[in-house]
Image (cartoon, rainbow, N blue to C red; front, side, top):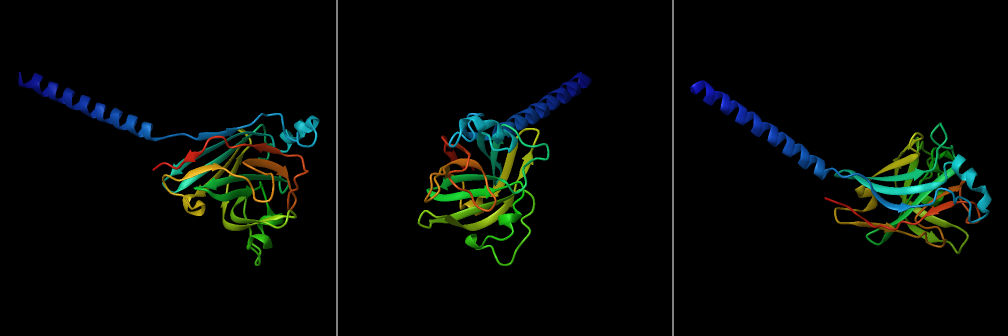
Length: 233
């Protein structure tokens, strides 16, 4: 009888342990949330602001926008993800293709502005207060910019708040930009929404050719952010 009692106790204990493990795993899985899609765009409309027939070129340049999403990757960092119809096998086009995400964070206008490589502007940008001295911006640099000023329609200048480095995944056509909440001035409960650049018609997420600056008459793709994102705890 005692032997049977001991076996039963062991079985019961094992069952409780397994249940607790499964319950804990389920709870952890429940807490883990994936990216939240905040905007989508047709995969064949790059350059329609100039000539609708040139759309295939945008795909080759990695400028055909498809989707934008935001994900909280840890307690202090958000990931801004831009999906395009395709990227070059190398990952991106050096110096030429510019990506900008214009947003508001609790009503304050901010931008993520970057390229696959950006030595032409990322190394030294007097208008953003980052030069002198010149610096190495590294691979896939994205400037976090704010305090943008319209200079009478000739140019828009923004102050650089910080510099982060993203990744370009050619296989998935995704550009991932991790940004500390501190650089955004965000905290749990903050709302990130669609924004429009001061003094121009550029809004939301846009991809455009750029040497040092971009002009509105250039062919581009633009994606409207339709869903605000609330920073979770």
